[in-house]
Length: 181
Image (cartoon, rainbow, N blue to C red; front, side, top):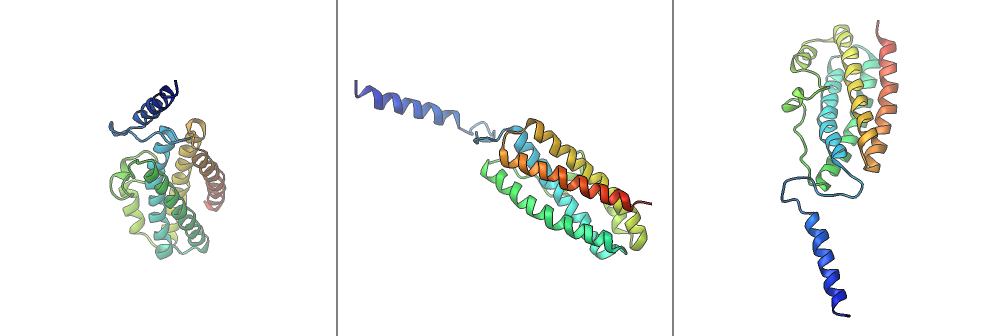
């Protein structure tokens, strides 16, 4: 009887490990993470990278101290979030999608290549007039993405980050909207 217990334990461990195989190319089973969590990070990383790209334009092209300050806050917050989500994706053996400026423009919620090019050709008050509503809309799309993972995700840290994104970006949207003519 004592020999059966180690064999049964061995069989159980082998069965559990076989269930965690990633031979199909799927993300590994991670405690507390599901496909919604993975998809959120895979989409939010290029979304944030594009926010950073467009915010960096403000430091060079804006005439408004408000726009420059808001852009600097976006760069700081979203750069840290990109690092966090990239680390999660790597720990889940999930792909990190390309940065904005590559395939990211085709993803829903992204600023188009034409809109980015337009911003790159503007300066001063003209830049600010286009940048403010464009950034507000981009942030709204990020809030929608975060709300989706709040309702369907399982990873506690992802949900906590999503809640922060909802709160912080909603406040930023309200501030930006108040600046619109």
